Image (cartoon, rainbow, N blue to C red; front, side):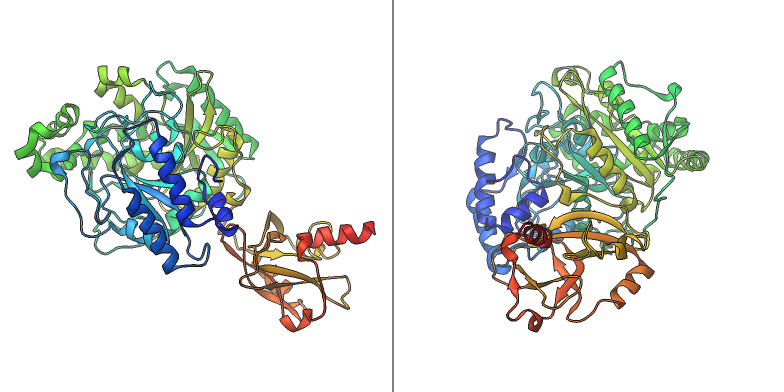
Length: 601
């Protein structure tokens, strides 16, 4: 039985326990048929093709979780190519059927993910609300009277309603973040160029980003790492240059009173304040900053010459098919006609002036914490005033790609009206990994669950801990566990406990004879079907790790352990000859239980 929300750790645990990708796909088919929102998909993959894809994966990679995204169902926004499925960009007359996958979709499929359909969007990715499509308007999973957010509307609803474990969106002005806020999801908005756009219909080609909607930050980061990487076929693709943020003493910039604008929405404002206090409780220093230059940069995306990029993307099609456009989308794109090269250069000059002004604000703060969207609207209100209300939604998102930032949107909780709000953490380019621990901690502090399941706990297995700090992880299974005789070798050398979890199910545990203090021996036996064994994952400074490993006596050593979620970590293993005739304690589930049973006897 799968949970309501299909997060990666739950799927991997189910697969480790015997569920197959075909079983999961059958559940997806059932859920998709029962969905009450007919506007999520533009082109769902037919049931029999889904079953065939699951069977093909099982033939290609028969071992459970043997690929990073083995059997993980996902959806793709319908401006991103998937071979054999039409790409419409929410304009039927524009549709074409690509012969090849986009680069990102190809990478995800190679990692074992199974695409279940192409999702709805604001036509040509022009809008932040989700109502500008001839295929209908996907709705908030919490109240069908309200917008889902856009332009990646169907992608967000597919994940939030439990039809897919993740979905691809695109983001020019906030389309990978606003729908996350409106549906209680995480929205991963990478540094521009980190994920290649090869095979995606452009909106503003110079600033577009492919994005990821996921249940947790850990899931989104794991998926991003599969999808990212330089692609020479995309002229805007970039090689990653990872940048760090302070592990301690983090300075988080927040809005001053003068720059706060929630358009009368006290519920979202209260959630923003709650997130600020959550960041403070995490040990961050809260620093007010001047949002004005960021806000002016944001205005350039639609009020300046960048709107001409939208025209450049569809100019030939618009010339012959103007009547096929959504009226609001057409009005926005046609507004670029007459924009001159002089205006384009002046816009670029102004952006660079504003960028220089924002440098002074980045001197004050390491990370910005902003509302993802200042408010939300009903579908009826949005249709009655589509341009003004849509413009309000991008107040805190439009600048991010223009100023070359990484961002992660996370849930911030629910208002008294039952609708969710969200916040976004933002930092300069290539801080994608460094932002993740903060984003994950804020999501967990919000206590808002995942997607439509407000009450569920965020899985511990998806927790994101600070990385790139010179620490190396190691899994311990016996005398080095917390409270055990040798734990001081970890804690006393500057180590920190990362998490308690279990191994994959094909490990066995034995009591090693003639060891002081008593120690276990861990062996992997492919084909053994157990429940996994308790381990602790610790992180040690690099020099301490080297000293620790050097002292490990035979027959023990360090090898790669596979955990229950399919990830791997360095950890204690044992030479097979050492456990011949030794007492097996696998059934007890771990060394701690063995010691407790021994003391009790």
